[in-house]
Image (cartoon, rainbow, N blue to C red; front, top):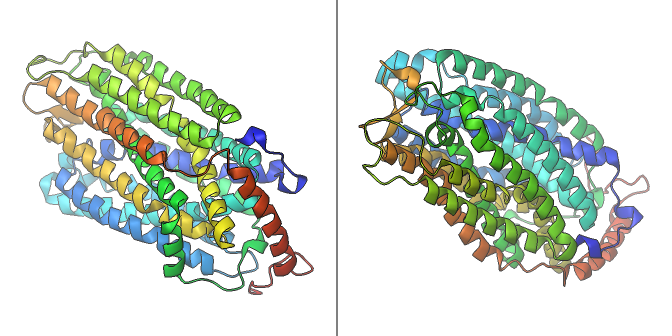
Length: 511
């Protein structure tokens, strides 16, 4: 799609604004990556019961669904000389970093090994409240970011450039967040303490990018309407938009697939790739060869996914990514499956471990599309809506777009511990707690299959459903050039009608 469009000088984005916007991806990349270890820490180490985890995730999911539309509406109604979105980031960015640290610092004495079952309820409260604080700050900062993205430019090439820079820095942040992965794959008091030091360091460093973002990224004030539509009216318009419907389904299903893989990743390293105390003499480095393929898959997938729109369009690139994830994760699950009763009494590396790595590598090829094309796809939906209604609803789309993705996040975080427990992989007791998780009984094959169900089978199913849902996305290379041309005329009219002589909106407050 992007190769067929010419970029006008007015739509080109400076390197400073590109880098400034992209830097906002660093905190999210680090935090989301490390929160992939949430259940390895809370279930595998602290010993929080799966029932409490499920209750917390239900409450968390409800707040997740509500807070995005609420803050989206409040942002759209904000009127300051700094704009509608930037002021929110300035206030919430430091709280964002602090709340992330809070998630991984419950009192050590409340763990199952030290406090026993008496501290399960206080542990549950910390688990829930810390996540609610974190998610509220995450929502505010990234709602503002996603609302700003569509208005920076309407040019497809420039959007892809910004999204690629953002994805690159997000991947760098995520890679940094994966550094302490080994510390929780086979936890001990010393490794958990080292992990918490990493949390403190990353929390402090992650505040810095927001300073550049708020300085270098500017709002386009001609998009501020003279009057604000009611939330009900805006929501009705968004939910009736065919492009919006397909996008919400895509974001939800892709988020679910990503979080199941990410939440189960530490358990894959431990039980499928062999780094656990039931495998005497194993070290994290023994698992590294199995991880090289998935890492290479991400690199190869990035190249392929960037190449596809040159000859097709963004819709085709996302379709490929969903399909390849479904196939790859299905292969990994089939390879990891160990029939009940075939690995009893002692752990051994699953016979299909290398095929698991291969399937994981294939699935990993589809992962980069979510990072690279989620924001451009959302921006196209906003463009499509504006071409029909005459107004942009960036924050409302950003908020309502999460009505599927946020519950999927909670579902993954709650479901993975339940699946592991149902396949006999449970927290160790206070006698041998340094093992993190142990197999209840002696059927190690059953435990390995449970990890494969949580990490590979469910993502394969979600990705397959995503292919079907994304088929209904109505924007492609045939109709987007006409939408863009219409918007260029509309935006010219808005600049002449809505901006004063200094280029400021006529509808902003002086303070």
